Length: 187
Ligand code: FES
Image 1 (cartoon, rainbow, N blue to C red):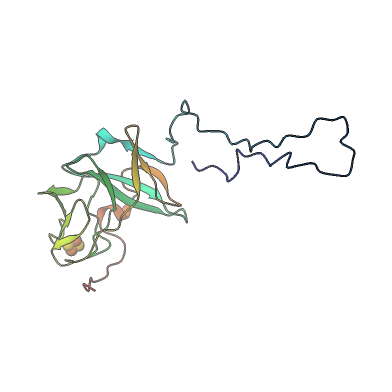
Image 2 (image 1 turned 30 degrees about the horizontal axis):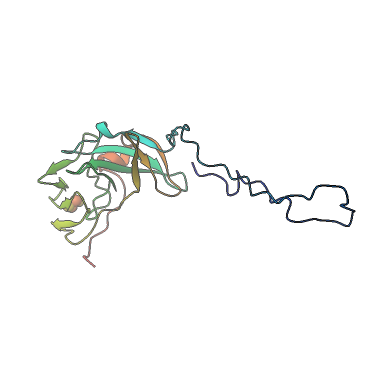
C-alpha cells in the first residue's frame, strides 16, 4: 500500500539557533538530518486482500483466469489474466470490443489458440501479448487492459483506484445476456 507522504519523516529540527535566549554555556544545537527510515527488508511485500488476485501458478498459459475488481466508483468489473510464453502475466477487461455485452471468458476460461484469445461469438482473435484484434468484425481494435504486477509469486492488481474483489465473474453480465451493444466502427 502506498504510504502517506511524509509518514516516516520527522519535521526538520535544529536548523541553527532559534529564538532570543542566551546560548552561553550551552552546547550549540547540531543540525540533525531528517529521520527518514530506510526500507526494512524484513517487511513482507504488499499482498493485502485488495491487491492480491492469485498465485502466478494459477494463471494458465493456454486459457484465462476470470476475476472481478471494483472500479473507483465501487462498481464490479470483470477482467481476465493469462500468462505469456515468457512467463509475463497480463490482464485484460473481459469484454469483446465488437459487442460489449459479450465476455471473452464466461467463467470457464476463454478459448486461447495459437497465442490468441478467441471471441466465441463471431470469431474475433486478439493477440495475447498486446490485446490487438488482428481478425474478425472488430479487427483493429484493442482489448482494454488492467495494470497488474507479479511480486513474490503472486499477481497483484496495480490499477490506480481499483481493488480486487473475487475470482470469477460477478453475475448476469458474465454470461453475455445482459448489457448494451455497440457496433464497432473500426475508427
Ligand atoms: S461479439 Fe466478439 S466478435 Fe462479435
